[in-house]
Length: 147
Image 1 (cartoon, one colour):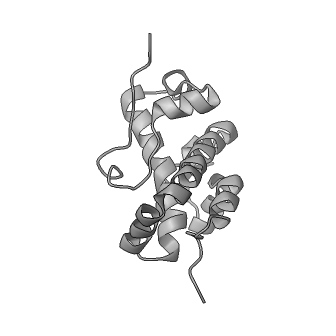
Image 2 (image 1 turned 45 degrees about the horizontal axis):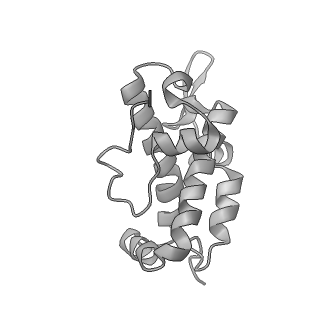
C-alpha cells in the first residue's frame, strides 16, 4: 500500500520546481508519515513548505527578483530542473538528519522562554551546505547576483 502523497501548500505551488513526499521517500527511503510527529497531514505540508522556503526564499530569490529567477529557471529548465530538485531533496534530508525541525520557523526554545535567533544564525544551522554548493555551481548560476 502506497503512502498518501503530500505536496507543498498553496503558498509554494507556483514555484517552477518542487518536490513531494513520494520523491523524498523514493530518494532517501524516508517515510514522512512515520518520521514527522504530530498531525501528520499538517506537519508534512509545513515541512515541505519549509524546505522550499529555505531554498527559494532564502537562496534563489535573495540574489534576484523573484519573477526574473522563475523566468530563468523556466527558460533553462532542461539544465536547472534536476539541480533545483536535488537541492530541495538535499535540504529535506539535511533538516531531517540534523533534527533541526524546531528551527523551521526561526524560533528556538531557550531556558526560561523563547529565543528569536538572527536570520544568519538560523541559516548557518538549517540550510544544507550541499544544497548551497550545488546551486552555486549551476550553469547558468542561479545564485549569482552579479557585480
